[in-house]
Image (cartoon, rainbow, N blue to C red; front, side):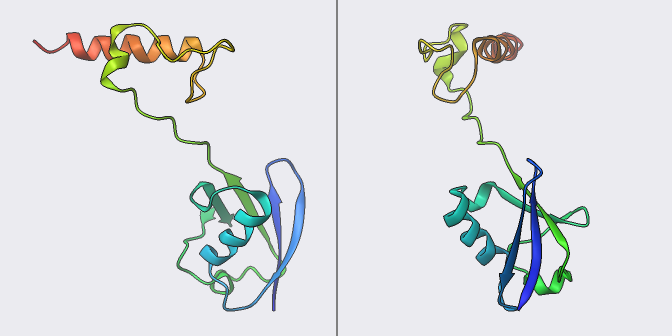
Length: 121
């Protein structure tokens, strides 16, 4: 069995024990079920390097060591062609649209989009 510690940005740590044949992808699937974080948003970092999904954990020499867990932010959907008018049509009462952008961010995106559109005849 392979034993190691997983450390989170919050400072919390958890000890794990997995079979020696476990791949990074398989371990991420386990974390997905435990933490409810999609595998594509998980990053496992050991000695400053991101562990690749297709490698076995044992190949990274992590026995009794610490791996850092980082959750990537949800991707912001690209602004569609309807959002270039300068107004934010998806604003809700709490000041955020469905993508989680606040009014200032939406204004900046719209301004940048307008600049690009007006730059070409």
